[in-house]
Length: 109
Length: 210
Image (cartoon, each protein chain N blue to C red):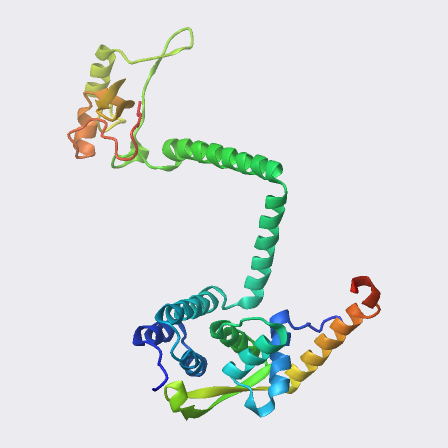
């Protein structure tokens, strides 16, 4: 367990957004979910380079589909988690829950 | 009214920055879709949006490719800057120390570089030798001209002999002046170095050879 890497903050947001979106996870919808749930304005370039990095690490896989007029005839890059990505997400969430466990009184007003 | 589409220059800039075709197609499509949702927003807002997205793409795709390393570097840099800001007195001392250290090292290296590392501005500089006379007291003295003339005529260990008279001159202009090294009457160097100047400085304002 000591060797397992916890996903970075933004990577965790992306993974959670992809899990929420299911088969409709692509750049625009992922940025919307992150903005709605965290209030963070995510630039598409930042998301894209993070997706590239996560794909290289084997956490996600992507495919191009659905070229449409609303996107200037360009396709969507759909994202799905790999088994390795799912495992990393689970580990990261567990680690975060463990480290915050029992501290409710410490930060409650 | 149809949704606005990304300007061509913007798409061309993205094409230039992003090499991976899948990432490029997906990102340009995403940006096209989001730009279209700005609808009839004012031109200034659209321009600001484009600028922000372009900066983000440029930053992330040029400086942040290896993001794990860069994230660590950015965190370290941010921590260092915040620490410096919290202790301005210590920071000032640190900066002054660094400035003095770097300045002193640069000055010393300039001297070492000029005297020891840089070759002399003459052909076959490694074959040059300076000959002096040593007095009975042990002090080094300049060569007398009669001795020079005798050595020049009879010595077989040297190809050529020449004399130099080290001195310095002050060069002045309307912007100020500085002392420069010079010497006079050095026919050997005139031939060997191919220069009409006996001690033509090739680098920097001051150069001594004697």
